[in-house]
Every structure is written in C-alpha cells, then in structure tokens.
Amino acid sequence: MRPYTETDEAAVIALWNACGLVVPQNDPKKDIARKMAEHPELFIVGEIAGAVVASCMAGYEGHRGWINYLAVHPDHQRQGYATELMAEARRLLDALGCPKISLQIRNTNTSVIAFYEKLGFVEDPVRSFGLRLRHDAPL
Image (cartoon, rainbow, N blue to C red; front, side, top):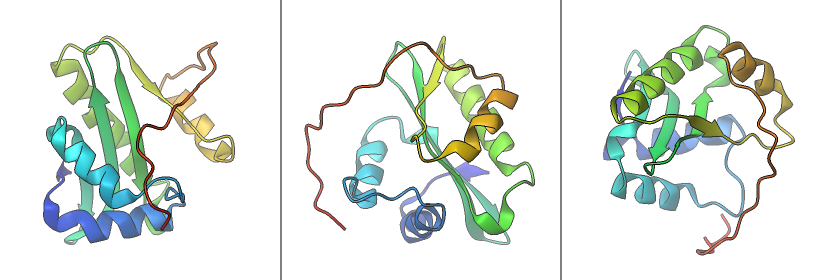
C-alpha cells in the first residue's frame, strides 16, 4: 500500500473500469484531479509486483470522512486487500481527528454490503441526495 501518484492514473482508471465503478456521469480523470487538489494523502493504492490492483479514495471536510472508489481488481478479490485498504483509510482519517466515516453504495452494488457490515459499518437511517455542480462529459 502506498499513496497514489500521477503515474498511477491509467492503471487506477483501468482498475475502476474492471470493478464497474466508472459511470457516464463521472469522468474518472476529473475525479482524480479533484481528489489530488484536496487531501491527496488520503488517496491510496495497493500494488502486487508493481501493478496497481487496489485503490481507496478517502476524504475529510472536518465533519466526517468519506470513502470513495474502494476497489480491488476481480482477480485479487477476497484476499483481504480491501480490508487492509479500509484499515489504512481509517488510520489516516483518525489521525486527522475524523469522528465518523460515511460511504455510499450504489443500489446495484449489493455484494459489498456484507463486506462493510463485517467491518462494523451500519446503515444510517438517512436518504442520500445529490446536486451536480459540475457536469463531466460522458466517456
């Protein structure tokens, strides 16, 4: 595990595509650029033999931490890498004084719910709303 660097961009985007995390309304290059402008140290990747096989993009704005783009390449899933990334993200956020971590899961991504529950996450009784301020061009 290590911090993301600019040379990782193509490999990270390929990883996100392999994991089904790239959607038309989000340009992954723009998402990465925006992340690198805010707490870039909270963007971590996992490597095996020099190849990026995992990522976790954490964020913190002073109220709560967020987890985005947690991904492990399908060929390397169920080997503990996502758990290790989450532990590191939790450590980094805790070091910043973060009191709570939140995350959102797409309704279609039901397979990860048990993973987060195993890590101690519980479903909050809230509804998630969004308002897009920047419209990324479709891929």
